[in-house]
Amino acid sequence: DIVMTQSPDSLPVSLGERATIYCKSSQSLLYSSNDKNYLAWYQQKPGQPPKLLIYWASTRESGVPDRFSGSGSGTDFTLTISSLQAEDVAVYYCQHFDRTPQTFGQGTKVEI
Amino acid sequence: EVQLLESGGGLVQPGGSLRLSCAASGFTFSRYAMSWVRQAPGRGLEWVSGISSSGVSTYYADSVKGQFTISRDNSKNTLYLQMNGLRAEDTAVYYCAKDWFTGSHSGLFDYWGQGTRVTVSS
Image (cartoon, each protein chain N blue to C red):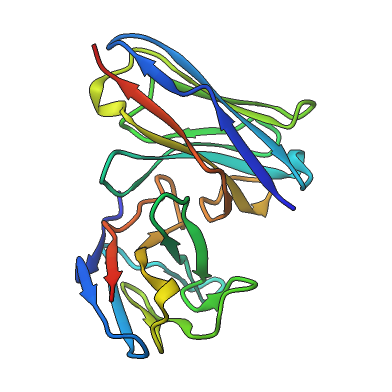
């Protein structure tokens, strides 16, 4: 199985500041056939289900604010919140979806 | 509006069984693969099982293979998870999740239900 490792586990950020979360996969998620990385990011607020933010490593899901961006390729990926808002307090998970089982990172808790 | 409503969770003794259901609306259910994802208390997300849009193909995490059975009834727009031989480590919130793509299981989820809680304890 592919192992997804996020860092840090917890990330205190001031309002308006940048938050950067890292995700590393144990195998490359880049498919040369379509030049796509099979990597997604989800946001989970307390008491709520996860919400898809980004897929193909950098494509923002419809309705997601543009302060959220994803980057990276192969085995190393980054989720950036350019200017943290109070409503962004949540746990963020990366996930690969290139094969079964689709595994998630352990989560990064973003707090003010 | 896409809605996924899980039901069937509860308290069950070790070794017992439960059947979870997920009623879907707001999209053409029969076109999309579906999955169950669980989250143990205070823990991260674990994909459990997936099923293709037709129901012909099913997929399981090693941790539940032979113990859980996923199925769907496209005429009722409903997804199921039959859970047998439950253990304490199966205690979790179980989410129903819709696949982003049509057809076969991809594991990219664009909609999630609110979840149903399963507690395995004597």
